[in-house]
Each structure stands twice: as structure tokens, then as C-alpha cells.
Length: 386
Image (tube, rainbow, N blue to C red):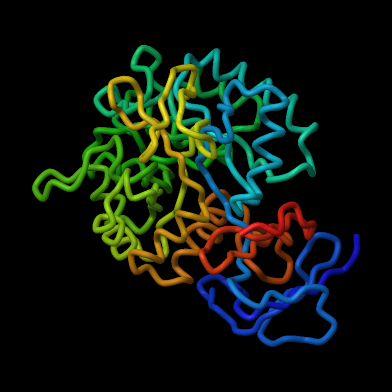
């Protein structure tokens, strides 16, 4: 693979944990798909120089139900290829396809199909990090767009069935369900990130989940108990507990700008930007699917179930960074929340940063903070747009 030297008038580097900063100008050297050198300055002989915008690490999205008309849980090979090949348009270089609530046997079958498909996708586009199971171990009281008929307790047998393929990397569950704490310990022992979500738990129950190994909270403030000052719930514990990283859907519909600022301020260095994108993302208004159920994408706002329940989003992760900047979040914090923080959470310190030894996954964000060029393993997979 050819060597590559990129220079940029502005670039984000992460030479060590907690040291992310903007350099101007900056450069990155790539060899065999890996960053060999990155730093401040503009050495001679660049293969490409970026005059404006920002050179940033490739974006990492831990919650993608679907995109470009396809729902990941039942997409065929064409659908998977479409999503993997086109997500670089949004700056996303690694992602977790997300399967929402279904009977355990149906989810297990979807995992087996995915395991067979993944080898055909290797090198075609955005890296698939594994699968995020959002359910079926959720609370009926906080079901959101999930089908309550399929919600169930995380018994050892059900957990073992879902772990069989080795693809599960993130599980969202409600810690107040029977067997949940034992399930968290089992999942964490298997190398799975556990996230509290779709939960009516008390703050104490969420703290117990963190004691058992949970480290994330799924789409904070959405489908969970909140911030009552005498009866704190999931959202309160997510902000107060430094062991937990709150996921945030920053489309300014799921959570207001004011509340988003509270999340970034209270959970400094822990907030994770996610899209929770549904199949309607990247598509015109119309009727699409989420978990086998119809959803409607309106002219404005997120997709909706027939009863008006929000059902995922139409958000791009590069737009989430732009929204964070628009509400006053500083550049390093906004980019970290979509790169380094989720990569570290999922156990991939080789992703989400521009630093020697990391994968050469990069995105050039234009002046409007949308992806203009995207590289994965040092190969340009999207370019020329704005």
C-alpha cells in the first residue's frame, strides 16, 4: 500500500489519552493503513493539503439501526453493502449496526445471518465493529418504539443464545429486570459493553449496574427515568456517575439544546454522540421500517411510529458534531464525543484518534462540519463533496 502524507491548516491530534488538541497546521503520515506519525507543522512533499475545514479522526457511531432505506436487522447483502459503502459520506468510519427488540430466537438468527455476510463486506467501506442489541431486555414502562410483546428478562439461557455468534459488542438493557445484574456480569466477562437504557430504574439500581460492570447509558433522557430531585433515575445517575458514558442523540429533537449543554457540562469527557439512525436516514420523506414495524419520515423532525412515538432518527454523525458546536460545545469536546470516547468505550484504542499506531481512519470536515473526504485504512472512500 502506498505511503501517504496529508497536511491540513487545522487538525485534531490525540497523542495520548486526555491530550486531544487542535494543531494549526498539522500533518499525518500513513503507511500500510496505519498512522506512523502525526503532529504540528507542514512538512514538504505532502500528497494532499487541506486549506480549510478540519482534519479529524474517522467518526465512530455505536448506534445505527439503519440508513439509506435499509434496516440493518433484516437487510440483505445489497442493503448491507449500500450502508457500509455509503456511510463514509457522513464521515463514519466504524459503526455498530443496532438490532432492536425481537424474540431472542429471531435476534439470534439475525446475528447468524450477519456473521455470514460480514466477510463479503470486508474492505468495502465503513468498518463493522460488531452488533449492538438494543433489547429485548428492556422495561415495558419505558419501551419507546420497541414492541412490548417481545420484552423479556435476561436469563442465563437467553444471554448465552445471543452470545453464541461472538458478534455482540454492546447490549442495552434495563437493570431493574430479573437476572439483570448477573447478565451484566456475564456480558462484561464476554467482552461486551453494557449500556443502561429503556429503563425505569432508580439511580441506586443504575449504580448497582455500574458496580456489575455497565459503562454506558443509551440515548440519555429518552425512554428512561429522569432527574426528579427527590427520586433520581437513570438520567441523573448517568450524569453523576463518572463510570458511565451517556449516549446523546444531538438532532435537537430528542433532547433540547439546553439539556444537551447540561449533558456535556455534567459528563465532561464522557458524553458520546450517537445517531440512533433508522432506515429513513439519508432518505426523502416517506414510510420506512424499524424492527419490522412501519415508521414515517416527515418533512422535518425524526421518524415516527403511527402513535407519534419517536422511532430512531434521521441524523448524520457529522451533523451531530455541527449541532454540538452550534450550542457552544468546544471543538475538541465535540469531536472527541464522536471519535475517541466511543472508540475507547468499545475497546478499540486503535480507532477514533489521529496518533501513531492508530488505524488511518480520517475525515476532512468542511467549513460546515460535514464530511468532504473520508479515508479508512488510509484509502480514500469518499471525496469531493461538501
